[in-house]
Amino acid sequence: MTHSPELSTAHWRSSSYSNSNGGECVEISDDFPGIVPVRDSKSPAGPALVVRAAAWSDFVTSLK
Image 1: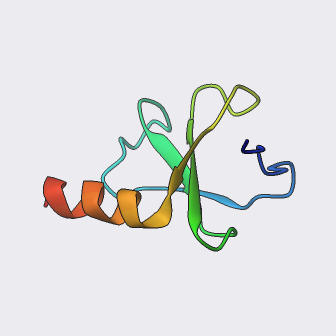
Image 2 (image 1 turned 120 degrees about the vertical axis):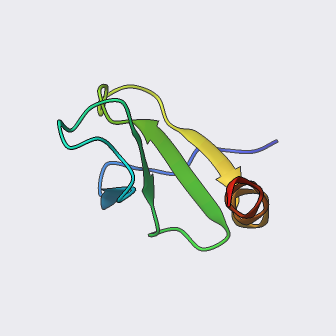
């Protein structure tokens, strides 16, 4: 069984590739060892997807 981390104190950042209007982007938090929380910038109070850091790294590498 897994549990969701408490994300209320997370510091979120968006990509430098995000549009300048502040929408249509994802935000991530680097505050949690081993995992990467990801959320929709248009819905900061909404749910976050939590992925393993290694999987996130593989995903980002594949985009480059």
